[in-house]
Length: 280
Image 1 (tube, helix red, strand yellow):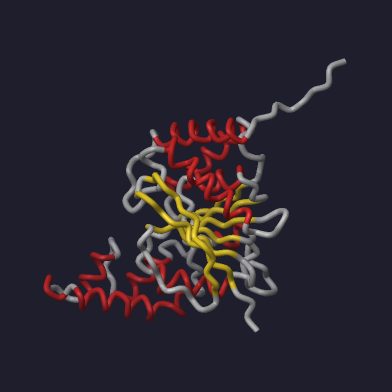
Image 2 (cartoon, rainbow, N blue to C red; image 1 turned 30 degrees about the vertical axis):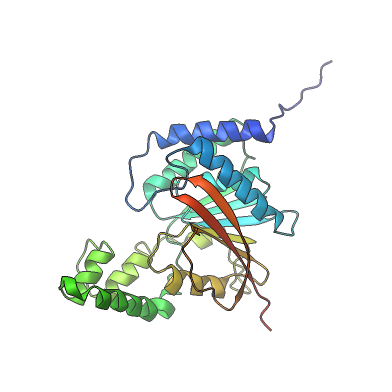
């Protein structure tokens, strides 16, 4: 009697299949404003680079079953690669409905082909900004836009019009309203609750890694302060950014050597790695 065995796929075979499936899904996606992933022009070269970078990131997490949250997970490609390199569970939060649907299709296709483990990815639609956190950073965002407006004075106009245009608002309102809508345009969605990744006793994220490829004008003024508040001591913040794009690291984080991603659609990118300090 022959024993039934599961088909084995090497990491290289899995990566080849992932590239093929992501490529097919990309052909169905129209260009979405503000979304330009690092692998969109040449996935055959860029995705292996991301695989290598996330492998190095995984090695820095000293846990046998690490977890990762991708803030602004797009079509879910980074989540799937993270599953391939050994993250036990990955979570994605994405506001754009079209991209969220794409991520679900890609995930199911990869699971059917046994490229990633069944049920290893969890996806939720919504903003990665918590509604209850927005009031604490609203003034910082307002001041940031004021600075940008002051530097742009030669173009004329008034501040309210500037904010309306800069944030791409489609409805009338004052600057504060535009900021609130930009940070969380659909507050009825509760992605953190849907994913179950906030510890109810400590009000902290339970994930070991928070990953983001920011295209957010409030990354420094809103996202980083939220990360300081939510992340547990010892957790890792991984920020994919252009090689020459620096930002001020909050004192709550220590910086580790970056991980370079070469040959992407945006040239050389650095995965900047920060670890949340133990606060005494």
